[in-house]
Length: 440
Ligand code: ADP
Ligand code: ZN
Image (cartoon, rainbow, N blue to C red; front, side, top):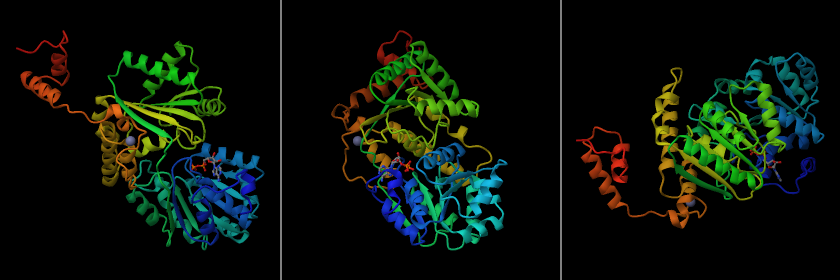
């Protein structure tokens, strides 16, 4: 197919060619493919083949700017249409069909005057892509209200195929995307979510200094190898604590969270991408669009809010296909925060979705069977094997063991404590700890 040379690829990845062909035939598409599988090419190539403009809506400005930059470097006319003053010239140029790719936020797409769309349409539009399309669904983990209004553009962009792309979609979300965007007889592609090169492991921890020391040692071990490391923390306080501990040991670690200014965030991102820092300690704000091929280790310090976000965050590991590891360390106290995530402004559906996802993430932590199978089943994919051989539970030493004796002792101890104490007391008693003197 012409145009592939712009990207320096010799062959298509699975599904890319099919989707591109359907788009050229003007068919609506829903593309569900794992992070790093190459979704962007599905909307980047059609404009080069058809000579018409591709419109792309995406939630994050920084993500679009990165794409625009890399497309320009490949000699492709791409631009971001924001809200700054320079945009009037971008807009004028766009109306003539000058740009092969034109990116904008959903907010911008909704306020653009009809006259702009009709001029653009006259010049030629080959597709309207909605990236990160799960943001449209209240059942998704990243709902954005503006996404819900994108369907009204269908009336202006007559005859233009709508292409929804996402890396996360349970069946509910998929149906929501199709309905919200009013996709007509869409060509649906759901690629396997299995990231074979990723090892998944989970450990329960006791929060505190001794764990922080342990974690820092883990990171040091990783740093000694090749590639980069991302440590996802649940709070900004944790980000600061871990990065401070790393710095004390002389490890140059970047930090990234929502309370940092945009300049500082961009700088941290840039240093990480350019390998000037190999460890990034961040909250989930360090999010979409991190296209770094050689992240070898993603650590979660705390149970993530949803299994969807866990899958996406851990999915930033091993994008180049080389074996990489994803460890999740959770504390039991992580599980008590369900209501905390449900704000008052949320609808009943959103609350249910949040609670369901939270429970799924907790179940993932407590699992004694194959973690990959559980993850894939959660995304509606059947994994026929019982074991994958590449997660902690599938490694021989972690197989199920008969714990009836231990359970009996624990129950007896709980009973002996009379139900007045938390779980720590009966555990201390069993361990013979000095603090665990049984109550009289
Ligand atoms: P996604 O949007 O699905 O997360 P991207 O579109 O960012 O994934 O692509 C991930 C990586 O795969 C990028 O580095 C991209 O250059 C590369 N890639 C995409 N398509 C191909 C291909 N056909 N051949 C080789 N590399 C590809
Ligand atoms: Zn497994």
